[in-house]
Image 1 (cartoon, helix red, strand yellow):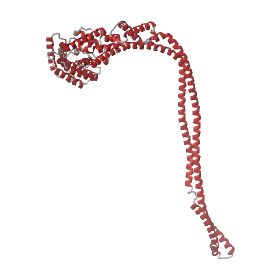
Image 2 (cartoon, rainbow, N blue to C red):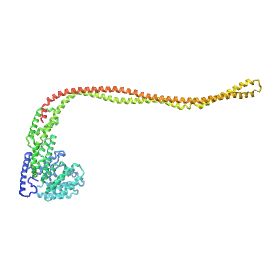
Image 3 (cartoon, one colour):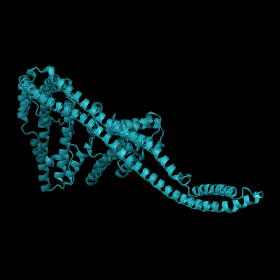
Image 4 (spheres, rainbow, N blue to C red):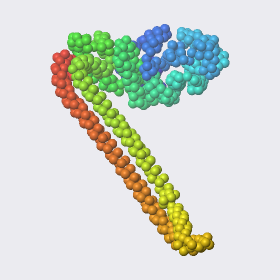
Length: 623
């Protein structure tokens, strides 16, 4: 995979030699693009200390996850596992804390020994040293009773790249075992996905190392399941697609890498971080394609793609610089907050450092830089407008206060109307209850009277008959005695035997009139009983009618109470509603006055804004 690496399946024929020559010419063009557009160095410093230092610089940038992937080159893939990466920190954390969770944790002492042997194996300069440390590493891993996740990974790398131990099957077994441990381990899902992504990438490297390009391609595709934006996998997917003859697919993956670098640059722009911006400009992932002859097959497509990205770049950089200089001369410092000042400091350093740059990524970023600069200018203009609008608000505040006061009164009246309705309802209910209580007392009296009509002596037929008969008997006896004595006195006064005659007169003469009187008394008693029955019926009818009239008067009285309450409520509510409408009308009038005054003030501030920001507006409008 290095620059001088031969492609696969060269048959030595003249046709193959012609293709080889064409490929070599294309690779030369590709490298020229790299030198001209990306300042690619075909002979970079390749010692391990410089690579470790460079990786430390990258990890110290503390990038967000979407931009924080460290690109792992095939040639330096063994080196990754001795770098101070977040993944390695996670894998080593249990050992540092003396943890012993089976399957993930590793023995502290063994872990240190394994790491030491692995580091020496990676950095060994002579093959004999590499062989010795490879064997020592393998023994140390074998002694690890827990067979931790990291040890399985290191063993897989060892069997993938060590010349004396190379075994694709063994390497894949270790990687698969590590993947199972990562899947079942506890911890953050994102870091577990990152580990499983890396395991797939390294499995792809192992396949590629042994010449199995198709299998490498498939495994690299599987890695994107765990990390869809995986940039290392995409670069080598592009390379394997090209080797397999899928040039368009390979070109798409390469373009993805270019876009990824642009996004990282845009992130630095958004953060106003010129140091990060410079780092991404000088260290794009895209540079790695120029190290591989395999990408020569898409040179023409790639050149066309890059030209499309750099359209109008010369015009844009001149326009950006001119706008920046004009803006600086406007001296609008009073309208620049910290954010604007930071952005302008960023643009100042950027223009000074990159004005003459022909880097492809800088030229491709110019539209975004232009949009950011115009956004900053617009922010300054908005600040100017806000200042003048704030002055207007001082004048308009009295209108707003009056409106707020009237709205408060309307709310109060609305609440008062609601409370009033409840109050009238309760008052009406109480009045009706009191009214019904009085009528109920009278009703109870009439009902008791109606019940007692049958028992009243004057209206009781039996009592009337009994009374009349008593009077008749007494009267009959009196008449009998009186007439009997009178008859005796008239007829037998001179007779000495008068006692006999006396009794005879009383019984015969007096008894006759007594009987007549008694018979008449009986007739009178019967008449009295009949009359009592009649009087009782009449009295009942009268009481029933009085009860009916009382009920009617009660219903009428309740209706009157309700009607009077409703009228009183309507009058009161009407008065309150009229006041509410007056307040609303006053609010409308004030709003009209406010709008008119606001228009007058706006006309004044627009003139002031134009005077203050006329040149600034010209800068924004020229975009």
